[in-house]
Length: 171
Image (cartoon, rainbow, N blue to C red; front, side, top):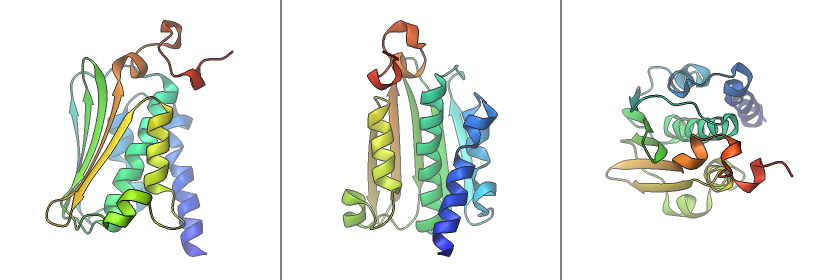
């Protein structure tokens, strides 16, 4: 019951970027360890590459939720000494990658998720829904890398461009 309550609280905290309406993903990601109350557990840093660009609000929120879940999973499960989130505003894509040097993910969990948890399957569904690609690599020797890529035509342009995913366009 305690885990369910904690998961609910964390889900609500994960919605905060929407409520704040901020475009600054790097600042939102930087606050995740404090929100999870895991400061000092591992060295965490956010690296921004490229010039910050305005994102479609729906894309921004979904990218944040995917990245936040990857960071939360790293803190909760990896036993890593270092966790790094790279946010790259590229010419042709928005990329978020979360890397840790922890114990890796069990191959069964990696392929189908953990029973009763929505972490990895939820991240994959969100990525697909926004037209992104999510890949996860993991090994006991080198930790885990979660890599999300969203094409720039989806992430950076307005809905008027006609390139937004179909679920975002009102009929």
